[in-house]
Each structure stands twice: as C-alpha cells, then as structure tokens.
Amino acid sequence: MKKTSEVTFSPSITDGIFWPTLPSHEVNAVLALAYQLEHSQWWAPEVLTAIELRQVEKLLEHAWRTVPYYRQRLDDAVKITSGKLHMDDFRKIPRAASGKFEETICEIVEA
Image (cartoon, rainbow, N blue to C red; front, side):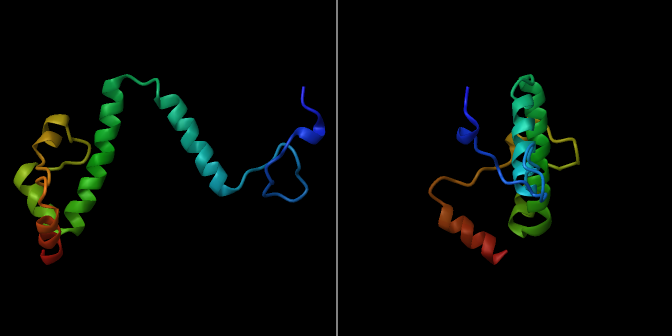
C-alpha cells in the first residue's frame, strides 16, 4: 500500500479542491477519447467499418468543398451522399499514382 507521501495528484482546475481533482478541459478531452476507444475496441468489425466510413465521408466532403482538384476526382469516381458512403464506393476513389507526387501537388496548386 502506498504512503500518502508517495501518491501524486494532478492539479485541480478548481481552487480548494485537492481530491478528487477536477481535471483541466484538455485532460477531460483526452479522458473522453480514452473512454470512447476503450469501449469501441469491442465493437464488431462491421460497426467499426461503418463508423470509419462516416469519418472518411466527412473528410471527403470537406475536400470536395474546398479543393477543386479533389472535387473533380471525386465527381468522376463517386457521388457522396451524407451517411451513404459504402466500402464499394470508397474503393472507387482513385489513389494518387505512385511516384507522381510532384505532378499531383502541381495539379492541386493550379486548380
């Protein structure tokens, strides 16, 4: 059993509260992520895939709205409808050609 002198405490954001401490907003954000990851690690693979596709969908929507290069590539490959991206659609999205990074960057900047 640890002695009181061996126990360390995180600082509390509220003066006068020593224990239990009230963590900062940043620490709360990390704790919330850890909580979500702790629970989601047990989800079925198809549930994880669906959640990941929703996140990819948000990224693709942003790319489509803000970068003409990606708008063209996505329009040519797949129609993104909120909540409707499936793995088959995701696989239709063209990948940047290997070894063509500089050309692709030039296309993005020029678009």
